[in-house]
Image 1 (spheres, rainbow, N blue to C red):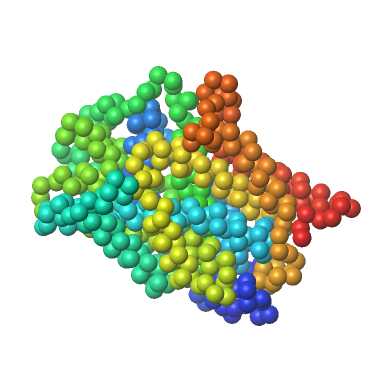
Image 2 (spheres, helix red, strand yellow):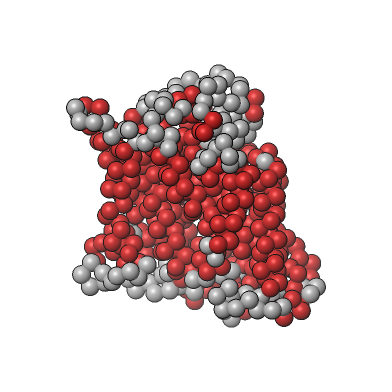
Length: 497
């Protein structure tokens, strides 16, 4: 369990089809990310419009303000555990997520396992690009209100030409930052963090001053609360799973960042400081401000872009939209495109680098029609977040079981880049564990997306779906360890081929 000694940004003797400059281990001299870099990384990712909207969605789903805040805190403390665990091998060996996957899924199996994460990253990239483009559009409406009259692009698209161009402009800005490389990503996150914290506090202060009473604002949250007759427990578990799912993606690909850590302590402390506190603070700001809009405007405005567009003062609107764009940019780059770019690069490392992987991510993000994914807050939580969190929980369970239990924290780095090394091409144990762990939650998923109705006779399966991430993570760990040990002890052909 010692740190690797080599400083070479390459794998001598590695197969060309499994490596490139972007996937090779980061040399010790380039591992410069400090505690502040990781804390600011999480501030930059957590201070975003989806975080703000998630809190409001919990209240609309039936929780009150303190129940929503508590659920968000617990969810982020839970997801912090696999976040730190999966970050350890990245910091120890300097390898990114798709390369770490090769240890558990095989050098070729890791390609498909990584694409499961990449697909989610593409979807989130599209969502954040749409949000950033929307902020840019509202910013331009201040001096050019005639943009609202640009040609409507049809009901399927659902927006006008100016909105579409703003979306593409913000999309292009994200691609440009990725094209410049990871060092620019680090600098963008470090610069954005204090700006975003200040912006959140200013928005909070505005709501408080407009209403004039802290308690009065909290009391107003009752006006946006959904049906609470079923009790807190009914809403708690699906909401907790959704919140865990919010960062389930990063709990897998966190090695993409910890590979640059100066030490294990740097990323562990930085993540512990940055993730839970920022998520709770900004979520509470979302709850507080949305509640205040009921008193100020007579209706709940849970999208901050729509809220800021109502301000009358020109400089306030401009500054607010610029800050929203920065927030969305910092989140989008770190949380979405870095992981997907690496995962797509892993499909054919000798032909696709990090930059090309980022461009492919962006194109897929557009094709997924992100403006439709966030149109309904309930669908956003129960269809999008829980569905993918159940899948990624299974992958995370396999990774943790493989590295910490099966391999006792030791990897042979060179073999991760060899077709015929000790990790082979496919690990059947991992794929069987993945498939088996998903079986208990599939009926609930099919019910949730409307493929068939289990309301009358399938209540158990519907309820099971509320615990999806916890179920798939636990089952995948147990099944993976059991099958791995069985393949060692049995005279039957090994599951690893």
